[in-house]
Image 1 (cartoon, rainbow, N blue to C red):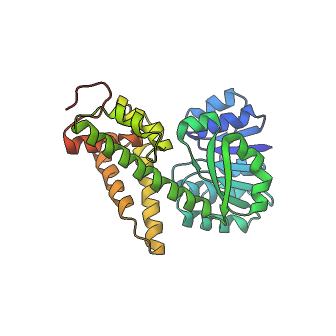
Image 2: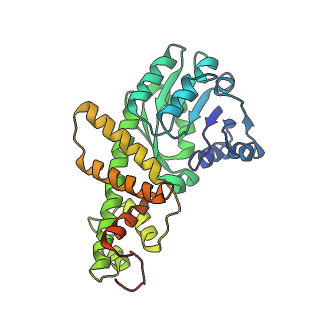
Image 3: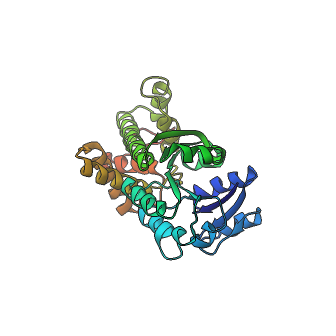
Length: 298
């Protein structure tokens, strides 16, 4: 299938590479040097979203937030200007479900079918092609492009109508944020109480406290590694969208709000582009300690 891909960042670039490796004809659009890297691997490039829409069967976007999706889809030289009947648009960004519904409605007037299909798994799973994809939209449209999504995914799960994919992703981001905070809090308790947090990790990972977050982020905390797989500023964006949606539907999210404020404090301290496991730095500051493996317990 001829596929257009817009947004070649930490997640988008390896996703696009997987499409190329699977034999799909790829057209890319990005403002960074990543576009040149993909063209060297065999992709072609477009000068605008409108130009891309006119020549492909499927457009995928992986951009930071709702404003960028609106710009790409509905702005000047956007998809809507080059769209034709039968084009499928799959937005794999994590954005507001309200935006997904509004963009889908505008594109439908041009005969374009849209799916919102955000992902979970971070950079490692983007590289491996094992992302979890949560899809909202028309099931028949999903059936047309599921083979393409499978190239980038370990699982593709249909959730419901347009916007449902991003509702699922917001729920995912709430669980991940609270889980990371809980791991950071527990490790800080262990460190300050005189127990090696690495030993605590080994002791609890096989029980009810075990989780993918514990396995992935716990070792990063113990090593002081804040190299981003998913950045604090992007998680703040996701939690803002979760809180805005919760206010719209009348659901209090007190724990989400608390972790969002922790992340905001970290961003103020200069950790905005660090991995979200840097939440442990917030607890270290509060407790005047440092969570590390094989170091003197403070």
